[in-house]
Image (cartoon, rainbow, N blue to C red; front, side, top):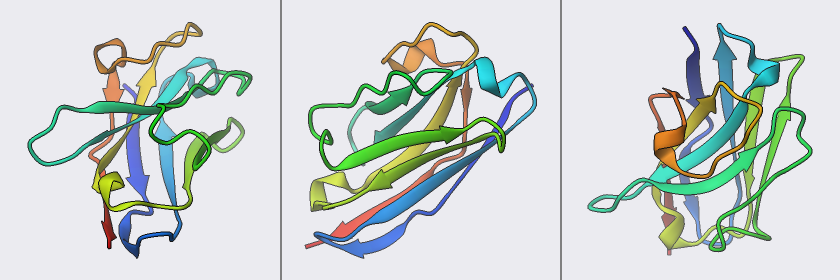
Length: 124
């Protein structure tokens, strides 16, 4: 069983930065595709970014491309999401997700394991 624990959320002013972390335990982390998703109140969960098992592929949602960077450290079983130039519309609960496959997907149903989420609030 894979467990994921997110951290690093908080309140930040528009234009600021936050770095989210996701600690994974159990399973074979280094062979999993990992993703970040977010869900704002009243909205569906949406894809933010993903990273392949070796970090060689990192697709992003159009809304965050150029501002967010996903990375991973397989030696530490960690995934990160660096968020810069934050906007009020980035406000949401951010979830880390694991897909036990080397084949990357960008939709929530394709991910098996989920963290509890961390709140990110961007004030204007």
